[in-house]
Length: 229
Ligand code: BJW
Image 1 (tube, rainbow, N blue to C red):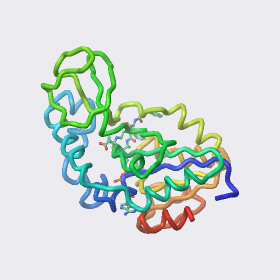
Image 2: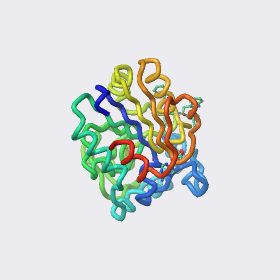
Image 3: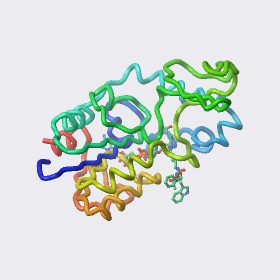
């Protein structure tokens, strides 16, 4: 690691899999059980907000039973010990990176522990269940609160900051993501264009695996700590 000055790490659902958090596109993943159009699009929320609330309430409740694993912990240690610029970009809405100690972190697809009001635009921390009856803390109107997550067709968070860091990085590492969802799936090409060394750490070759200069395939709890050593 000492030969690099500016690192960007991208993580996806695979890094939390061994903590007991479901992935999306694996055989028994979330999208094998629910249709993403019903629960992860603004149109789905408009059609049936109660269904969407229940989907996220269930996932939020499960957070109490899961813990960060060796891969999350290794990335938090890397951040602490690395002398140069560091940014961890996660597509995950769980808080396992924070709980492992990561601080230079961007949740590009939002957070389970957040909500916002589509009536007045106010964002807030949220740890309880959401429902169509919950009033907004700012404008006090019920029926407008939604999870602070990024659905298909919506703009991911803090993209300017992410793009700036990728455009300047000399090491880009992608961990536990299938490479199906844009714009995250395009980051490896942006990093290559910036002249960065690119590494994939994943259970299996991802959709864009041939774009990486280096790859290690296996369980995140094994290959991430080994890579960070
Ligand atoms: C392990 C492991 C272990 C397992 N160890 N590994 C056509 C072409 C291009 C783009 C589009 C298109 N049509 C539509 C689009 C845009 C669309 C998109 O990409 N669609 C594609 C499906 C085609 N994207 C969007 O709409 C995004 N917004 C957007 O593009 O705005 C315009 C814009 C353009 C340019 C710049 C900026 C903006 C928004 C995407 C929002 C995604 N939202 C979700 C749900 C919300 C959050 C939630 O509910 O949790 O985010 S979808 C879901 O997929 C979730 C994830 O964050 C995301 C990525 O999934 P991830 O993390 O890769 O998980 P999996 O399950 O796919 O993969 C897990 C991997 O881990 C696997 O490879 C396993 O092998 C591995 N693994 N166990 C190591 N133990």
